[in-house]
Amino acid sequence: MLKFLLLSSVLAAPALAASASDWQNRTIYQLVTDRFATPDGSSPTCNTEDRKYCGGTWQGVIKKLDYIQNMGFDAVWISPVVKNVEGTTAYGEAFHGYWTSDITQLNSHFGSTDDLKALSKALHDRGMYLMVDVVVNHMAATQDPPNFASFTPFNTQSDFHPECLIQASDYFNNQTAVEQCWLGDSKMPLADVNTEDQNIVNTWNTWIGDLVKNYSVDGVRIDTVKHVRKDFWPDFAKSAGVFTIGEVLDNRTTYVKDYTQVVDSVLDYPDWYPLVNAFMSTTGNLSALPETVKASQDTYKNGAFNTGAFLENHDQPRLGSQTNDSSLIMNAMVWPFVGDGIPILYYGQEQGYAGGADPANREALWLSGYSTTNAMFNHTVGLVAARQAAAKANSNFLSTKVQFLSSNASTLVVSKPPLVALLTNQGSSSTPTWTVNGANFSANEEIYDVLTCTKYTADGNGALTVTGSSGKPQILLPTSALTAAGRSCPNFNAISAKQPSSAAALSSTLLPIGSAVAAVLVAAQFFF
Ligand SMILES: *[C@@H]1O[C@H](CO)[C@@H](O)[C@H](O)[C@H]1NC(C)=O
Ligand SMILES: *[C@@H]1O[C@H](CO)[C@@H](O)[C@H](O)[C@H]1NC(C)=O
Ligand SMILES: *[C@@H]1O[C@H](CO)[C@@H](O)[C@H](O)[C@H]1NC(C)=O
Ligand SMILES: *[C@@H]1O[C@H](CO)[C@@H](O)[C@H](O)[C@H]1NC(C)=O
Ligand SMILES: *[C@@H]1O[C@H](CO)[C@@H](O)[C@H](O)[C@H]1NC(C)=O
Ligand SMILES: *[C@@H]1O[C@H](CO)[C@@H](O)[C@H](O)[C@H]1NC(C)=O
Ligand SMILES: *[C@@H]1O[C@H](CO)[C@@H](O)[C@H](O)[C@H]1NC(C)=O
Ligand SMILES: *[C@@H]1O[C@H](CO)[C@@H](O)[C@H](O)[C@H]1NC(C)=O
Ligand SMILES: *[C@@H]1O[C@H](CO)[C@@H](O)[C@H](O)[C@H]1NC(C)=O
Image (cartoon, rainbow, N blue to C red):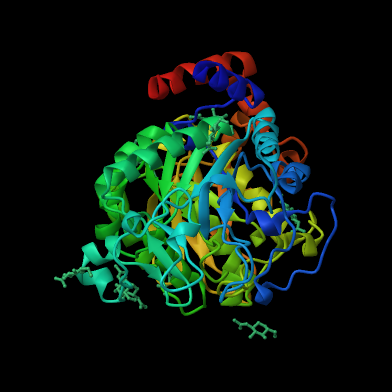
């Protein structure tokens, strides 16, 4: 019976049963399900300050997969899928999906069981991956003390840690409090699940295995990982059976590194802080980024490989709310695509969205009209294409550590062969120059900035000096690499937009019948 269910659900939406190494070659588009697309293509008003459901659904996402795939992305991270608290709370409605009330049901605002399966299948049919967001640490209460009986399946007070709110100083002094006290506040306490209780642990492990299997999920993003004891995670990750990436919100590599031992990967918050500080103004200091990158390369389980590299997400103000200089934003956007991590782009960045702190950073994307002609969209397509071309041209690209050939407060020369990225925070009125030495370009080699298709020629020593314009970043790729990747200038971006590389390049890994069988075999190791 179980075997039959498993087989039928897998056949309904062929799983790719993706491991950490399968994800390393991906580029992820993160969206807020309620805010990405409506199922009927309508454009209802959506005032972020109201914190209400605006009407985005899984069927809406399905209808807009061309938009995502045409930018070159080959994975989509969606909001948490389970049932949340209903109605208006002190902080509005649970449109973001992070206020779990019942882990055994889906959030009906986003669609039905069949709709989520259909999204999974639609992604897999395109060779794309589905990443689902899960919250294990807590359930959301609308009163203090919570009505524990309103939760499913953890429905008694003893299923939760005794109530105490985490204090700011605990983050530096008291890890026990971080793990066992509660997030939230008295208006909305986030009841902290007792993940020391073995029955509860078993429930979570069974649940995540079933969720992955039922919806053929390819990867799991785990919320608030640092708020659960570390030794909870290895069995949970194993039960998921697919790639796991955890949110450990801290700026210290010394703190975050331990979590790379218990889940496959972490969202790269330690690099994110210096990244934003470097590019939020023309007086930022770029030198801190190389130091943090080096620390993550040296101390994480897999170096910086597989970390989730991002500039924006649903929890942080968008960079556009901190600067109006689009050249700074374009520079900062480059980093996740040229480093060792898996690039993640938060929906709306490609439309130049500029919302500030939550809830302003959760704008409805339909209000942009899904433009494909604006400069930020074009830039995004170029970044995805540059990374994919580099990976295709050099089979060692993904396993070669990023290096900084030079860095000072206002410029960076970043090397991850075959590409070299030139970054600056001098701003749109500057004419930056970068001296590129030691990149291992050949003598007199022909090189393009693929973001503008400007051609350069290296000197007799393979070095070059590049003068930029309007403070914009550049990504250099030798013509030989472009040729190896099947791309060319002057239409480097256009190729990507018309023929998403994911569909062609990934077809070899997506053989529906074979992969369904393979998925059953992989799943079987965990379920029988
Ligand atoms: C850490 O926090 C826990 C939970 O609030 C508390 O019981 C314990 O006394 C704290 N430890 C220290 C050293 O303050
Ligand atoms: C998975 O599907 C089974 C069979 O329909 C169901 O009993 C279970 O609750 C589902 N679990 C999840 C997490 O979706
Ligand atoms: C982390 O942030 C704190 C508070 O802003 C700051 O004092 C500390 O220097 C930062 N640490 C690192 C490693 O950036
Ligand atoms: C930039 O930061 C680096 C190291 O983080 C420091 O050594 C340097 O003095 C800083 N430069 C400026 C101009 O602040
Ligand atoms: C950006 O420009 C707008 C409109 O002029 C202004 O209201 C806003 O404060 C500016 N933002 C920043 C970060 O300078
Ligand atoms: C889009 O990118 C291409 C480089 O591939 C560039 O030539 C073109 O000017 C860009 N268009 C816009 C609107 O930024
Ligand atoms: C990475 O993806 C590109 C296409 O986007 C493909 O050509 C290349 O072979 C892949 N590399 C690895 C190591 O999977
Ligand atoms: C930073 O380095 C670049 C060359 O890579 C140079 O042009 C620039 O003047 C340097 N800036 C500072 C502040 O040292
Ligand atoms: C250039 O090649 C040398 C020798 O293979 C290597 O040690 C070095 O890391 C390469 N530099 C870059 C930037 O890849």
